[in-house]
Length: 196
Image 1: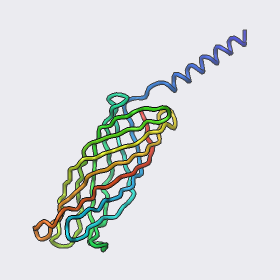
Image 2 (image 1 turned 180 degrees about the vertical axis):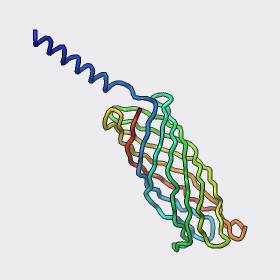
Image 3 (image 1 turned 90 degrees about the horizontal axis):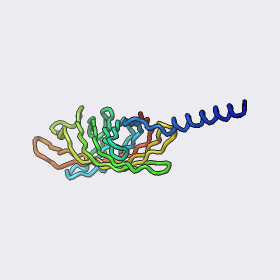
Image 4 (image 1 turned 120 degrees about the vertical axis):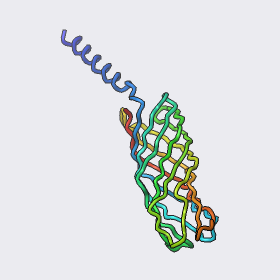
């Protein structure tokens, strides 16, 4: 009698484990990423403007309307950048660039790739530039995104993400517009996500 009872108990344990592994998580996915900002440094002014590339922290919150469709809000803290003209530092500013994208996810065996598109709003603050030189403090532009989530555990994923954000600001001196500085960064991120 003991062997059948042991077999039943083992079957129950295996069934419970399988049910736990297959149980769907909720509609939320939160990721923490380390992101490298690589600026395009496009400039139509005569100043040859550029900013430094850098690594920055990122937090994003996704909500899944269906298994395939999600909205993602990308957040970080204000980032300080050094502004240079012709390779010489002339000042600095901070930017806060929240981005909202709508994504399509295509689950595959062992990974889930996705593509997204949306809108970026960047607020420029703490501007420290030579006297008379100003920049627009607000920038709106499209954002494009591709990435992949790789399951590590039931609710834990490894994430790789690549975004192109269109971030531009007009530059003026003495009230006269000099041109447009196009940061237009490529953002490569790697991080972990938690589904719940």
